[in-house]
Length: 422
Image (cartoon, rainbow, N blue to C red; front, side, top):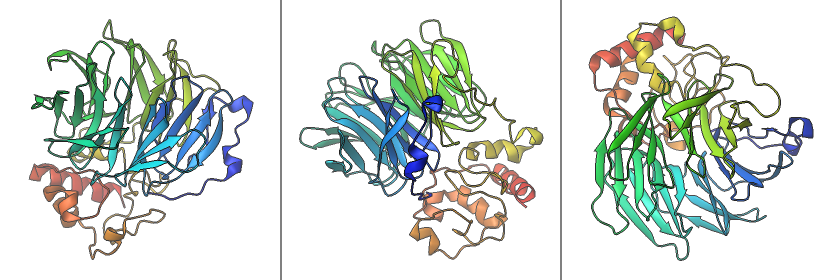
């Protein structure tokens, strides 16, 4: 991930633009709001978290402890905030401290999501190491929930103390509070974030652009089509009335949970929306995305608070309608661009990929493990990456684990990439 030192001048936001929070040097991956609505904390691919004064729209301080992207954030009553990082660690931030009073280790892969139990005593964390950990905040003891096959992307507490998790393996898992065996529900597509309403209903965002709603018994109650691209951000208002779901193209759908309808669509700049967080009254929403900004929205009307935001840009893959390689690439578009003008995102640009030695794209900070590899990208090596998976083919990578089982799809992808990345 790109390591960028933030200048204090960048963090000084004037009152006129106070509803658009500027300061991160990379995509905003995580967002959380305090219970009183006075402060928010955001985390970024730039390896920092920023604590914001929402009344003034200005940064209070930059928080640094993670070695890698800050992927998750949650408000913790009585403490402040917690952040989860690519380094597998969870940091607890209290009051105005510039250093976390406590850092929780345990995960062996990036932390993707965090949740706090209703009584505030436990913190659940989902990780790409395939596990969920439920940590007691009082003494640090942890219960490890194992069973997912691949990255776990979402976690939430259900009223009563049970935990629900969502994974890349396309399963939703309900873990009883008493430690019994989980209820496993299979779905048609890989899953990203998951949230739980006060009445126990669960919403999960899927890679097929659908929001699915389940009862606490695992029964599916509804399916709402948001778009054709993956949903990668999810939040629910404190009263459970409204769900916000964000995707790759910058749109955020506000769903009325009672009627199962989309009440409004927030239209951003056409870049992925990675994070969403409601203010306590449920009438305002923060969104953070690939353009490095945090925006504030009226969650009732769907209007942007403050300056008008440019409308969504064109779909970069629209020109390749009908090409199988482009369709396969859609799963990669959240993290990789194809042209030098678009630059790096969570992953390096793929422009000039073929013939390039691994870990040499300009301006991208690679892991030491990748820098030491003797590998040149070609159609054969890219196909092999997706045949056996990034972790096996390029150990030490930060790339999410994924494979393409069809040899025809792998060939279509590399043929298309060779054409469009020159």
